[in-house]
Amino acid sequence: MLDIKFIVENSNLVKDNLKKRFKKDRIWMIDELVKDYEHQKILQKKVEDIRARRNYISKEINQLKKKKQDVSKQLKEASSIPQKLAEFEEDLELLREKINEKMLQIPNMLHEKVPIGEDASKNQEVKKIGTPKKFSYELVNHEDLAEKLNIADFDAGRTVSGQGFNYIFGELAQLDNALQRYGIDFLIKKGFTLVVPPLMLNKKYLSGTVNLADFEEVIYKIENEDLFLIGTAENPLVAMLHNKTLNTKDLPIKLCAVTPCFRKEIGGHGVDSKGLFRMHQFNKVEQVMLTAPKDSFKELENLQKISEDFFKSLEIPIRVIEICSGDLGDKQARQYDIEAWFPRQKAYKEVTSASSCTDYQSRKLNIKLADENDYVHILNNTMVATSRAMVAILENFQQKDGSVKVPKVLHKYLNFTEIKSKN
Image: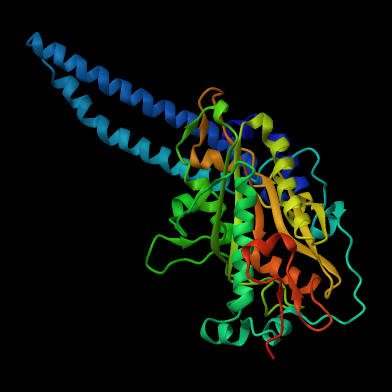
């Protein structure tokens, strides 16, 4: 969340930021927050004054008792203080909750270079890497191809669990594992520390990484437990550092993890929506970085380049787009997506997202910088969501006879270089 003092002192800037994000319906909250903040200061002063009076009366009673003087007047006043204090403390707590509820709905401040646009159609292409291959034969969709190669059973997955759940096995399961291992090795060489995190978080700490109000239709809740299945390893990696006080000299801190990810929504219907591309459960290698505020956007470029180099090494054509203001999530100040080329669909589709959330998450989770009296900045990036990467491989490396060659960089993780038909 933003700093309440920043909102109060820069209310016009925050309102302008809401306009750029096409969230004019939230502008009224800024004026309300300014009023609430002033009211909070008044209530806080009253609470402090009552506490100070309580302490003074207590000392006065002790002094008068030592002198064996009458304390009835002081005792009468002292007896009325607890109820009065409790009433003001309750009012103050209710006001803080009211302020916090509004604060959670105020999005992060946009980076000055974020393109302004209302929806995804206004996202801007930054560059393309690699040239899409031209095929002289018609490509088979990845779902039919995988079942023909006997490396997946989509019907069985849908039967036992529902749409968005699949069985993959044999060479495809090994390919999934190879992508995970290659992704982790790639990041370790870049100075990342591998973490095995919990796959469930309680509401308090999940709320520190996402706005649950925006994600209640996305995140799986564990029945009768204060626990949610993670939608990305970013959630537990960031939450791990709650209430930590760091030193600038120890930054950046680079963390990575490979986990299953769970998401309720599948997304839009269309090509291959029943296969691997849109799933409720999938494996993902994630990057998280903690930086000093001055390095936040420089490190975002570095984080983005890691994923670009990864997909370049897989020989999958990609393009990089910058997300426009209206398509950005509330916590992001700036975001790049990588879209891989899917030749059967003749389209680029998202495979990674890299973003700087500045201090938006660290304020909620109280992750501070000791030597700068500030909050650390937090960045995240998909290294590889293996399901989508596998679809890209099944399409881009599909051969005329229906077999699929494997990208060379993955050969050392496998005992085969090509997935061939078993018929």
